[in-house]
Image: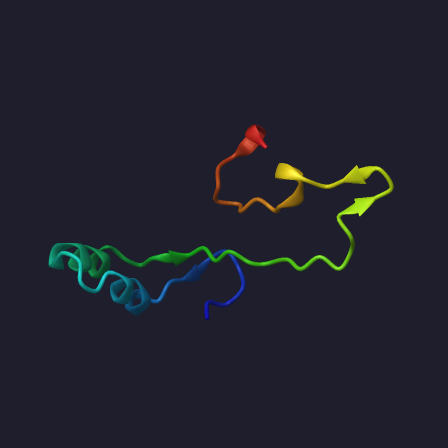
Length: 75
């Protein structure tokens, strides 16, 4: 499990493990290119209903945007 936050270092072993079975050059690139930054995606549980009266929260308004998505004014 990755610690909560936006600037933690990634564990290179997780990355190389995910690349197991791919080209050896790719695994070597991952090992040598670090340090890697972990950008975890967190789940935010809603304790409130998403509807009230005749209003419903849907679409882009219904989910948080990750700070590294680079959406800017597009959202």
